[in-house]
Length: 68
Picture (tube, rainbow, N blue to C red):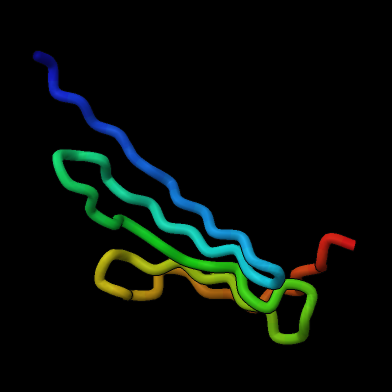
């Protein structure tokens, strides 16, 4: 049988945030990266991505408009 590899992206959307995590899909799932867009539509919005150890790979405080 040929080896298979893949990934699983999980997204959780709330009223003022979107959180995500990327997992390697092997025999067991292992988290590769995760992050969030927080305070959407509010002051001091935040967008960040971190690796599996919690090290911040990207962080920014953009103006994130709401859906209206």
